[in-house]
Image (cartoon, rainbow, N blue to C red; front, side, top):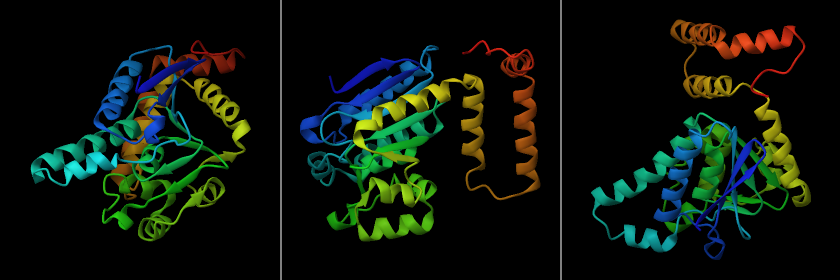
Length: 257
């Protein structure tokens, strides 16, 4: 099973399961992730997704054997192959449910991009992050928009060009990782975060993610002000918001909890 899906409370943990290949991304793994995202989005009991890796690595990036074959493809086919991973990254970022990356070991190249596309990154101190593409004569193309948003343009420029490795603590310092802690505490920290996320209204989380996607990097204009006001008005009129406000006033838990 190349992708092991494990329910844990309100969350579904998606374990990339190619330990012998350090969870390198191939067509089969990308397809399994795409299918899982489609299925779990319709599952009302799954409130949060956790992306994790079996074995010593979170994800070592693209499968080099696949890349060698891609170098011999026509430009049209090579572009089509690359576009599939780009779509997966966007799917993660635009997904209607929160996605948490649980990084315990190396997250290199496309693996670092997977983490960057998630909403939150929780890493063990033993985790390592790196963008070695330039040392292979490549560029971190599809993952670059997510890297810039995750750590800022200045830090992304440094690590894309130098291919330096970042420890879990250093990745947290530059803003790429949200929480970093000893390996023994990693799963408990992820589970706490999932429980906290599940306390929010599922529609509100979907609306918030859509809103953040819209405002990321958007210029401050009267149109943006109007868009954000419209987003609040739409949310405020929803049954979920009415239930949330009513439950707060009545000092009880909302129905989704």
